[in-house]
Image (cartoon, rainbow, N blue to C red):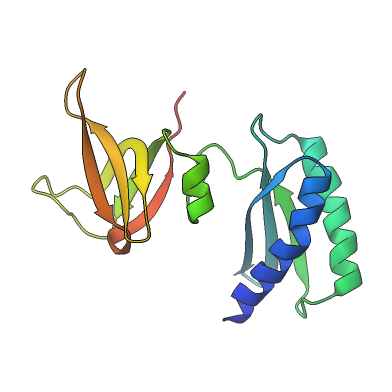
Length: 161
């Protein structure tokens, strides 16, 4: 495991009971260097959506826990927030939460005769190797499209306004 992965795993283990204490769940943890600064981003969620008070409570408690354990050697900035409306679906638990939702899949290279790399449909299934979405082929008919995970550059919820 890389240093980044180790930090994310340990931070998520630390964050999980804190999130549960405040009635939210951990969506993701990301540790990144941007410019000269490191960021530990903790994304929390709940069915009705998180608010600023949820983020503030979790942030204060997580900051205290991180100060006490002090396992990150770099200076970093802690951010606690919602994953947002157009959230990336990186992990199986993200896909599980999003079953039946409209998603946008971007592939590394075109995979069909239309030469397109972007597809929108409703997430209907996934396993270790594939992700399936239902795409409209007419006003009343949907068709399954199955993507190999190795071909997917990104998958996220669509923004519907």
